[in-house]
Image (cartoon, rainbow, N blue to C red):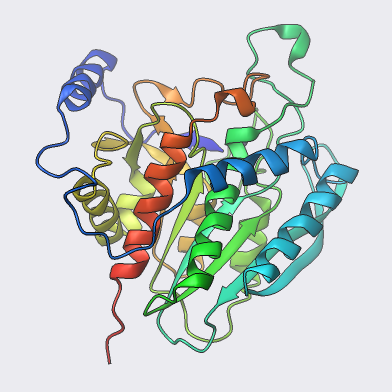
Length: 328
Ligand SMILES: [Zn+2]
């Protein structure tokens, strides 16, 4: 995950704006008052799926943990009734190594013409190069939030979607090789990050109807997470940003999905947009505070995963999907 600020707002202005936002209680609606159209997203279940991935070890490309996790994810999605395929290709990373890319793709209710795409990356960054301890910076880390959390939310969504069909179809893609980028990569768009989604954008797998829109989930399990509206999401998919943020607020999660804009993030959503599908990013990032505090450090582990955040994101995603009604 890398960021490119398109505009620089003085820190204190943004911090002020944000603190106003944070202190404002979510008005009116609480989850209890709002009648959800979606099934109940089970945060314990999503937490268990996060743990299952972490238990394999860091999912670093070309390691046994990566191979075993791929098999686990394919089996899980099939068990939930998904039509699953794996997009594979040899992929060269910035360090000159070659890894076998595995984008894991699952279609639910493939017969439905109108569809939504939800994605997350499943690979783990090979080193914790943001760790405060210099001696740890070349070491792997659990990537419980930066990778496993988004995938876990998707698995729980898939489980619910199998039990109760929404009116539209749902596609999921778990991206590989998102997080193997070079920290010194300063090229603005063609980057060493997001190799899985870049490859997919050039070799799209969805042959039938194009999804109406896509939502990418990245770092959606940290305590007190705040998701801001990044410039790429706002530029390519402004109506999706408003839809998702207003649903979140309506069902009681406006303290997570805050009405604060942020600069341009080149994450997997950027490449989905290049493939012609309007896509947004739900990511724990703000211009003021940066990424999730344990981003790319040893502390991105299971102890720092918060079920409340998984719930806020998972329920909002399900609600967005179950509110979609096919148009003729
Ligand atoms: Zn990352």
